Length: 187
Image (cartoon, rainbow, N blue to C red; front, side):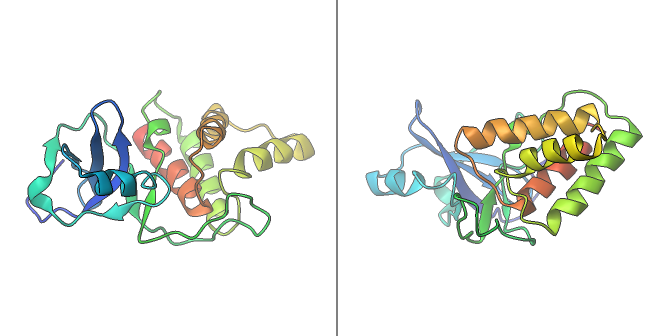
């Protein structure tokens, strides 16, 4: 997937056992690591899952083979922020963490499921339904209307809730991105 270009490396997490900083190019998706971070670099990376940041010294990046076809970090997505009542509301920098762990291929989705995911992604983009509230909203919507969501929507909503409970909060724009990517990966 990597192409001939100057990578735009962004630190998005750490590998605790190895002591590496984890990076991804937001242009092509190439993955890399900083294998020998300084104490100061390691300390700064502590906040990378919530606040990914640009890495400028490409000479220190060890390019790693990709084991997945989705992004862990993307340029800031346009769309609404969390609502004022969200306890996890935060300002976002130039890059945002994507919970690619939950966008993995699971099964081929039907055309109806892909359309439903696209519909929800479009809807979420203009709301304050972050990872805190999107799963709850879907439950309430189903309870109030009696309309049952497809298995794909239930699956990804459950996954969004689970990763949120593990500490990765994401804005409505990333919820919408996840819905679109999940449909794409499982098309």
